[in-house]
Length: 389
Image (cartoon, rainbow, N blue to C red; front, side):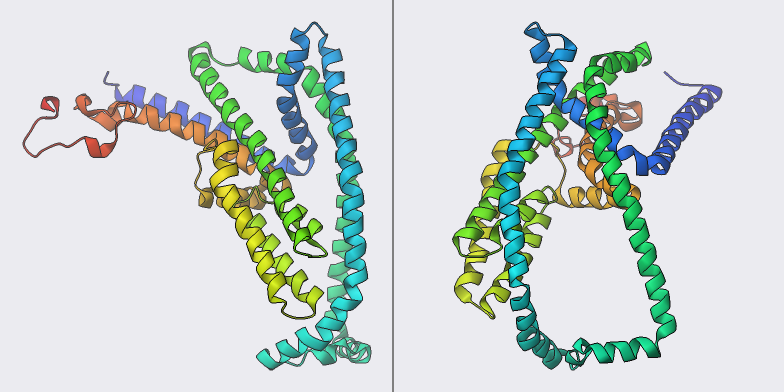
């Protein structure tokens, strides 16, 4: 159907209105991002817990009772995890503290002389307290500015710590109310969607729910498995801080290659300090542990547990995490992959609509690609009409 110029202008203005609404919402979210973290995390926890609550409800329990049972179960799992992890991490931290004098000796006797020989810059003299005091006296203005900046940072960090504690206290309260009223919230959102679009929105919501659910649960299991693999492997080869480094590497492995890269750098540094030099056996062991971990992740864990749930290239995943952190800080990094997963669902839908539109087909609607057809399978020979293909 051909639209009149007035109708085309009206359609363009309606679309422009929705673009303005989306931009406005993003702007408000950016302004409120410092206080949104507990609310978003609570919504995420409520979404993850809703299937279990619904299952308990179907067994004949009330919604409040089901939510309470889920919270008790989550609390027991959290306490169990603390009972297992805290003593292990405490021992690793004590090992690190005990190794500090050894690290200092290694730095003074080996690392700093090596750096001085390679760079030609004197570094050892700066370890002398008197020289540092003399330098501060001669550069007191710059030192004063640096001190002011430092204490300002400490003050901001103190406020951030207080905010973090408040958010942590709010999280279970908000999660309880969101989980209790989850079905009601979904119904209210569905009630305001225009009836002409309810089918499309429902379809996209279900696809997004499947993608997000599979990805988050699968990624959590992959992170847990990698943490166990790295921590166990590094401990077996005799690295004193192997458990702590393995847990850190597993925890940040949701960003492609970052967990393994960070883990191997920390492990190599810890191995060099522990051996007071280059212990080839220990260094090769570190390399073997992370190589095995990466092979298992690439060919066993991710394909079998996560699959291609999110459908994004690793470079796109890294960009999404960095962009989220740049725009919204920690909250943005936390939500980068879920948002990217939903955006990918929307982009697939937009691509589907585009390939079935008059804009794509032009006047030759016969060559609109059907689902599963690739561009290479459609060949138009010069001088032949498209409807003869």
